Length: 192
Length: 420
Image (cartoon, rainbow over all chains, first blue to last red; front, side):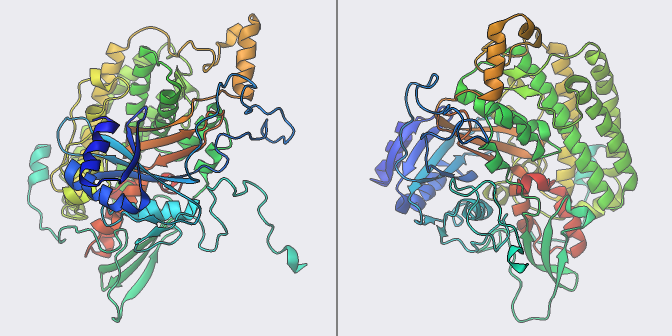
């Protein structure tokens, strides 16, 4: 099923829920309005058989496609990412908002048929919560906790939204692009 | 007694069927107000397969509350991927699931290959298939050995380690290292199979089925083994799908789903093998699924040795593939290509891709987002262990505290992959 067919099928039941659709290199991709996500997910699970949630992945697009400093470890190195410095004809399209939360769905059943897959995407600004899909796919529990922990996306309606991998008192969310890679504060320096 | 008879012989079921706990699927809330005992299982316990802490509330010997605390070996692999060029980030992948190391590499390499659009030569596909199956054997042998040792079958561990060593010898022969090999490259594999590999591997395939049968003889009909595993940690097929289980954990519940057959990648569509499924979804079926799957892996390896096509083992596109070593001494262009790839890396077209492969533990997915630069914008691994461990609470309803060891072991989680 192409992205257009799926978007049309979803749009017939839930008009306006699908904001855009593209045929990715691997699977159809639907961008969904965040406040309609639960309706779309319920429809895809019950009406289209996407019963298997592979993963919930959040992506931070802060500075996406912009120049970054050149060689690793050198702030003054040649800017190899500048468009045209070698080979890249154009900068990528700018994402509509800073964060994307991506849901990879599949249809899993017995038998030899290939799994149908679809990618759902919602776009969010910083600080805007996403609806939790735990009530639709229970497996989303830890996936959403992980993304909350590492990317700082709040999931409203999650029954147990706590940090999962990082220590409970950790400052910030490490997978954000503005989270420093090095330079951890040295403990007890004020105790001299 | 045949395996099928052993599997179907009656054993008293101790457990009620699994039901996903609500509202929190990965946690069982203990009943309030009663006098319960709360104990910590782990983080340093031999049977936690790494560093896992389970906070268990007990009513006598029965588990009435469960919460998992993970993250002890979180090393920020996904953040590290973003700091390296695509080519230099390959060695991170095998270090996550250190038992199914080859599968992680394949997922990452496969995802980037799809973004680049590079064609992988036929022979490289077959070599990758062969090593993916050797790696599956390796991982299942460790599962079998460690779950044996946890449940008191000490000798199985030594036998399994012996065979695991043979597998690693084969890896060493081809890649030069025993684990974490960095053997798959974008566009193929690093080197061709060495002389003599065919004979050693053939001999391994002759011996291995006998050893697998020996493990089945030791365990499958063993009354203690059956008593510890049968009817324990049951998970219903619909619960297994809802909890996102995959691989042997899902097939043990009776769902006939294997990405190698359903969504063939590499050379699996040209190979003949059976998908092993269970019926009851208990610990015993998960054990049986993995062990019988080892037979299928040996079958696949044999077919790979027989049907291995000739030809190049890596694509010829010098913008993405390192030139052969000998050319560096004679060709200026090769030297430049080599230098460019190693220092600056190359641009990967902007886009996103999600590639799944059947790792020893199930659906191993790699989601790569590229902004068109030389470093991945975001790499996210869908770790099957992570999901399997999440389902512990579903399997653990009204289990005895002694069953917990069997259940956690049978889900076959690797904490390196859970925490990443």
